[in-house]
Image (cartoon, rainbow over all chains, first blue to last red; front, side, top):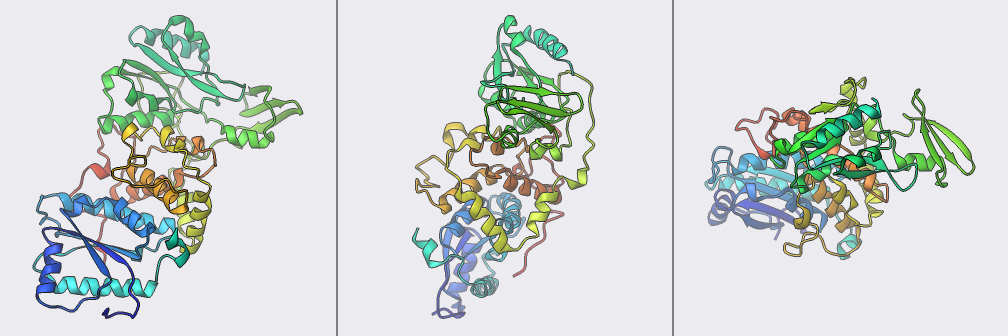
Length: 143
Length: 317
């Protein structure tokens, strides 16, 4: 059961294989309690995340999108997350221009050992999305 | 700028290139159309007036020959951007620059004369456009019917050229107010902005004219808007798919758009498609101090990174 509310929302998480996915795994292995609204998509690197992935998710039914990669300077491919940082920052500034609250999109850096930090991030982000409510009305979702 | 001087330059350039791209009279007096000059006798077709709106630099990436091209200030930024991205071989391009005092928006002129057939178009020296239709003559100021891009134009003289037809002119427009409309729009509430884009994009007929006219859309037949694998946008005609298409166009131009305004000019539905790209450009300026298509030695911000980003702060939840 979700900790934050009775009704689940749809949150998509793009996690890099080497750090954040490991971090989420660490949180799971340590049996940290987490909200269940987030669905994780594992990507090779945060640099693999095209800003269009985020836009596509938000336009097609997701209520929030979380992107997480290795800390800057810790990228498995040495510079993937540096590119990601520029792209995602650009996107974060563009979303409000389109009328989508930029609080619905968050990008962060979490390493494989930071299970606690992962739990905190997921809980806080899920709370934030629940505060904002669903992005789409029922009618739009049917299209 | 005299037309004779331009023709003289073209004749000279003809000796060293296979084709020169310029403008000639289109199907009616209000339209100019691109022309490809390969023979000396064709030079007489060439015209130059504020109706020469097209960005001829768009052709450069698809031509393998040695090309001479006529560019206005705004179009010249396209060539610089191509150079930054390594899309053209500069030694195969001869740039004929024209200092431009502003062009007209054909759509705005047609609205003024209520879409009547055009019999004659004249330009007076004091910046007036005189359009003759069956119901009489209409006189309008050039600034009244100029496209939006001319209102904030910073580069009336091409930023790069091999030959310049005329004397260089400097911009009188305030560089601080280039993104004023974008800033104004961004101040509106989220609901207002959402409603605005829904209304605008709902008109989109997905003809992809904006993409086809865009000089920086260089993927040609590999555009992801038309690929089935991966299937980014479906054939459904709903707002979600239309929005998605415009986001593809905007995000693929992030930090690359030279604001030539071809997308808006080509749009048959009058959607302000350039607005999204200009918003990204305004952010590029704030974040990386970068302006597309100005210095050939620059690197587009999305093609590179710095380990410590000065202007990007970590976001807290």
